[in-house]
Image (cartoon, rainbow, N blue to C red):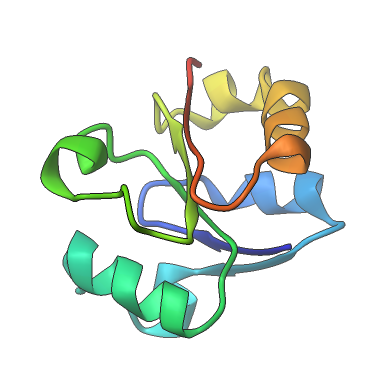
Length: 105
């Protein structure tokens, strides 16, 4: 699966998802894109999943007709996220196109 980490997602998570292709918004030069623009670009670039910590994304964007799946981590704290790595990995392995899932951390 091709995954994009949005700003705020701790990069150490990448090492736990080694079965996937992972890029960051920063690495792609997309750090300054607004959410709607970012979603358009990542769909165009054939990413399957956006992992973000932006809890307002579902209120700011119409995700209904999107092919991209979205996982929202409800914290930016690596110490908290690291404790949920197994759950995050499980969600990612089961996610289907267009899903929106929030993970409490």
